[in-house]
Image (cartoon, rainbow, N blue to C red; front, side, top):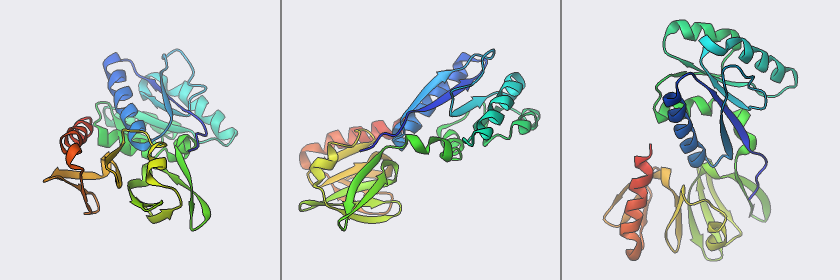
Length: 234
């Protein structure tokens, strides 16, 4: 597995409750997407220098944000800006900074995730990858694209959003490289990404693509609990 860098995300808001909510949801997103991310409060009197992604309220911090974005563009780095807006006036005020995304000031997880996904060029360097071999050729697979893994003798089949890959490494060895959560080994031959699980019923996991995966009898209760806990986070 390869860690290229840690992405720095700054949040500048006037309300501590809002900051805590944004930081909590963003940390969940980073865990689900397997992105190495650090979250920092940025005081309104400070510059967001050093941040890769910046969330801000247009009314209070527009000039400093505009300068930061201009500097990043000059050195050809993505200026990933998320403007936190409560009304159309604030949205219009943010346009001078060319925000990557607009986000309501009381967002839910789906809304925040969509905004962060628009900033992909800024966080792509923080993605955790698996370095494996596919048909004897090296491949790099980002963890967030893996839905589940299935043992195939001494090889492993990966179901990814981009398709199937058979890699030359046993499932047990790959399992040691994967963060748990968001990954869960539900039996000897399968390891799943919890966000790709649609439901648990009658000792089976139903995946988002319709595949049904049996759970080890000894792990049915624990697997149900972990799936429920994961989905309740969001």
